[in-house]
Length: 338
Image (cartoon, rainbow, N blue to C red):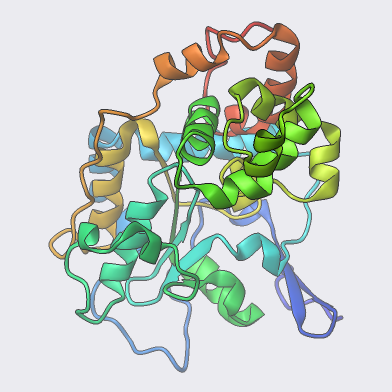
């Protein structure tokens, strides 16, 4: 295959219709703001990237939103320090990147980091008036495949154009708090029978001594220790990829290959969400829902779950999620015994 002029992107064809692309770090921080498209109508309003990179707006964001620019720079430096090889992106890598063509946005959703509400927001923005309030959309409807388009559905030229000119954002969370949140939601709630059957029965069969027949059949009483043992067991990833609810963020969203313009954090969710909606110019159309805090998984709750996990498993689990800690500037938890 011939390399396109400019040397910035290499395209390759896999299995006929599958395509891959590679992004060079030399473009980091230098968005192309005026990419032409013959089949895309001109917009009179400023694009999100033009707003982001205008001086006044950037200074306001730095002051009001916990230095989003600094966060992005820390991610770029961490990628350069801890990523040894560049590789190509496959269509599989782009399945978590939701596209909003109306407002020039790309959002990589991470389960257990307010992704249900972000999907609701995007459904309101893309719903042609069908939806007006995010919380009026049932949670299960927000996750229906096909309600929102992902970047993997487009052709390579269309993917590249959107990656160059759209505002790309991601929201992340302290890795172990996210992990505990995933465990609580998927293994301690009676309604998650599908997870109990698919994962719970396997975990109990593999990591519980002398399990009773009911546990083997229902898989609905997995302990957190058994869950941790399952995650660090080398057989787990050999058999199938991690479920998205406990997959590492760097594997879901490829932040060292895709240049995200805004890195929001769950810990500062409300101001960071307002910043994204302001950059998109939709703050008067939709507001990010205020999350409930009564049962939210925080550091204290995570510490209680890890209290009875041995240092051996602490160390192995930290090594498993180490890149997420490094890339998104999270400190090693004080309760971790390694």
